[in-house]
Image 1 (tube, helix red, strand yellow):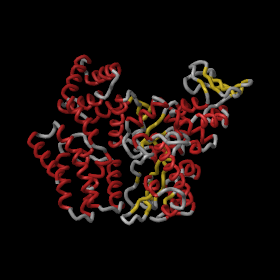
Image 2 (cartoon, rainbow, N blue to C red; image 1 turned 60 degrees about the vertical axis):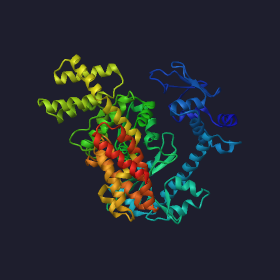
Image 3 (cartoon, rainbow, N blue to C red; image 1 turned 90 degrees about the vertical axis):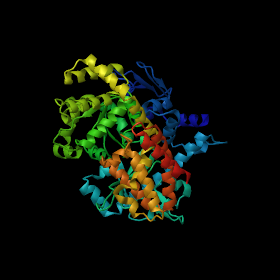
Length: 569
């Protein structure tokens, strides 16, 4: 490692490294700039080309190019070395000698998968150039110019099961590594086929420009589902990846904020209007990891979801997660006449839209926003409605960790309700005591199962998908699914319960269709696969059922007997 570091530092110029990231000005033998690590009006950040170091004489941060990359890109030492090695055109793998540690083996595996993705990206680019239908879709239907298409690498996966596998197997990649990317699958005879075809591709990068995955969108409106995403892989963890953050992070210092929107097309559509500070999760709800990642760059995080009920629910969920992580987001107030950003930017035009997001009057504290929305939902003059309103607000406040902010919000709520804040605070404490078991159970539900497994299970029931499968033991599997459904009806606030009650967001529907499609396209022994999946799920459900306080005792006993009976067979 020491040889690698020496070679990197001797093959780069710290001025070049910093110059590509912040604006430098030459002053005699050195260069100066406004420090990127704290706010200042007079430059105190100095770069010395002679000593190959930087130093801020105000905040004190300084050292060599590695330290600068670690601080500026918000990465650890290993990733900083990787970034600089790439800029110095140094092959890190040549420095690998002797026995590798387990961490180094994982790192090398990730490098191989990223390399496969890069080759696939080059393949998809060539396919777009040769397909007029895909080009017309991007240019005419999506109104994207060549600059945006190239900026986002919006290429095309051909309408062929064999083209991509044939292309990738021409290189030195092992079949095992190719399969890990989920670009290609195999049937029972080990024949390879492309998992996605006839779709526009969206390359997904992590925040330091590693190409970790792809997403896909239909061109033909008759195809389903509209969007598809690969499952998680050794290099792709949806809970930690934000689409476009690799670019948006470079503009945060200039704009002093970052926006979180709902989907890829929102980010791409907004980028047309020279506002490059938008990110989106990769077709999953915002997670603590997402928000912690954003917090590295700025605490001025803006939620900008659609002006509908699904958008409000997404805002509510994201705000709760933010509060748990001591982040206090703002809400961007899109004018009510617009359903989403696409409508707004098409009607307002570039300059008016930029004025809209630069105007501080168009932002609201998330608590105030949610409070107002819920106030409009309930009739506060009706005792029952008033109680529901208070409980929903109390539930939101229960996620706060900062006592001072909690006090401020309680006082604000008291004014709305025309109550004494001291008595309202006592009510809130009572709410917490009464709901302690409920909150604990809710946390256990999410620890005991995962959304990915939930979607796979429930995709079998969704739109009677189970009836279309060529399985031998269909009645037995349907009986197990019926048992799961019965238990799920008691597990409040879980994904299972939400699907049962058909309280599905567009994101839920897309994920269910995606899961259904995976089962349909994955040409495996479907009977064995389903039975093993259901057994695994029942083991998790056994823990949930055991701890659930919402299931009546007699029902719980029957459920546990049935689960154990199935697991023993």
